[in-house]
Figure 1 (cartoon, rainbow, N blue to C red):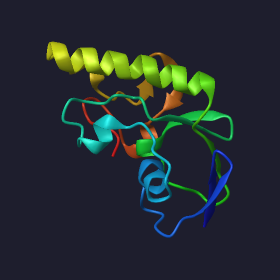
Figure 2 (cartoon, rainbow, N blue to C red):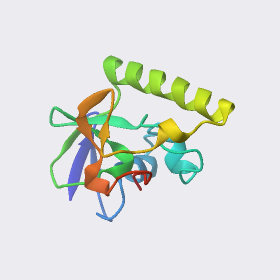
Figure 3 (cartoon, one colour):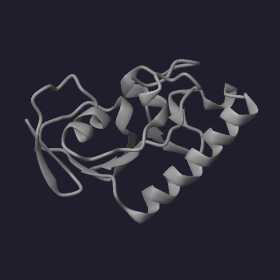
Length: 125
């Protein structure tokens, strides 16, 4: 299957990988510290991307043939920066209870991570 990330055409050979992993394999680093650290400190919610006009989390999104992913855009970058700051503060304070996935993003209910099975204290994989 073929997808696009920021206009770059990418051939996906393993549809079981998420967008963070696919990006990394193709030289695109998607901000996802919690994913890379196996959710040790909860979810950062910083891997926000946009697919065909809908915001989603890259760590919990599997590829679908023909999808067009936007990662590098000013508004998405600002969201990531804010979330990374909150994530870092939570880690420093030792309070990661606010970094749990709950199915939707509390700051933007239109962003869903339910496609990766998040509920309660479990996070996207």
